[in-house]
Image (cartoon, rainbow, N blue to C red; front, side):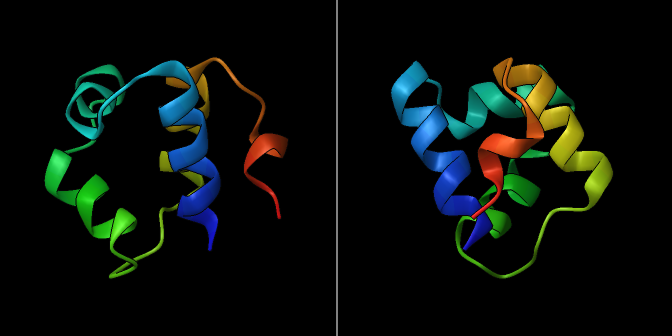
Length: 62
């Protein structure tokens, strides 16, 4: 699952989903739905997440 890779980066950088929400402008409820597998992030949101975490999109590929 894509979010597992995002969560690993969040854990490595000690960033919460709430903080990621503030960094990206993506609603925290939306990020929580990604984390629970309810929905998948769009390409645009993945770009925002990668930029906020200062990583390449390739980091999230499986």
